[in-house]
Image (tube, helix red, strand yellow):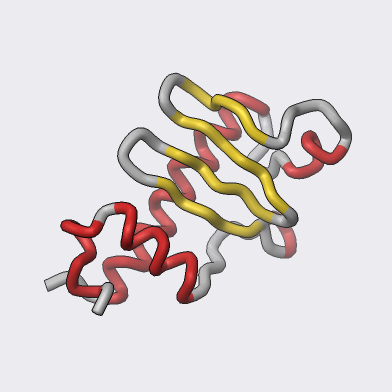
Length: 102
């Protein structure tokens, strides 16, 4: 049985995976400043099959099999989440997280 803790760990792991790809492509984990200064578009490709989409203070990263949406926190933190983001992440892979959706 999948527990809420497993969902949270999966979400944070996926965020870290996306952030690592952003760091490799853009040289920084937080690309908001690049977007706001006009150096990058608000959405685009990171690598084949993986795209980013910036919004407000956050970023959605779309992988071929699922997506994750997060906000950058103070001091470039990426470990925050809320019920809505967890729910959306869980619905991306319903077979893996079906027990957490009820």
